[in-house]
Image (cartoon, rainbow, N blue to C red; front, side, top):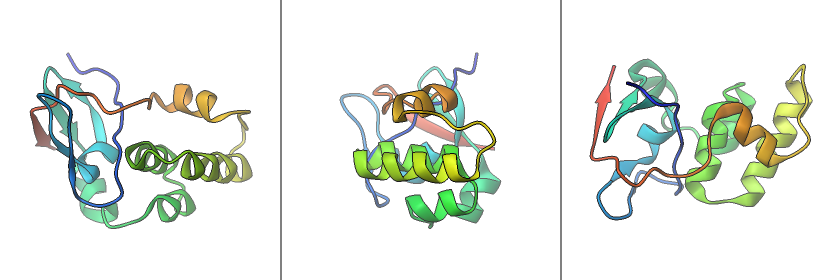
Length: 119
């Protein structure tokens, strides 16, 4: 079973993990979901957009990936900027970062990711 995605924390390609799991930024921001301790990653999106910073992703309309990047960076400032960009371009504005996180299902770095599967 594939669970909804949660996304990660730090700005570059360093790996992030607490305890069991270790995962790269680009795998987090393009994760489609999780199956057990495996992250299922969108290969096409990862190949095309992995080098972009948080706001570059938002400028391209990739708001979920931009929010994932901000969460991975653990940056409240970036999350606020993603919210502003989303509200500027979105048809259905949201009133807070928490609402945006619920909308996209992005909250924190799962700590049990042991491997990735790129599809």
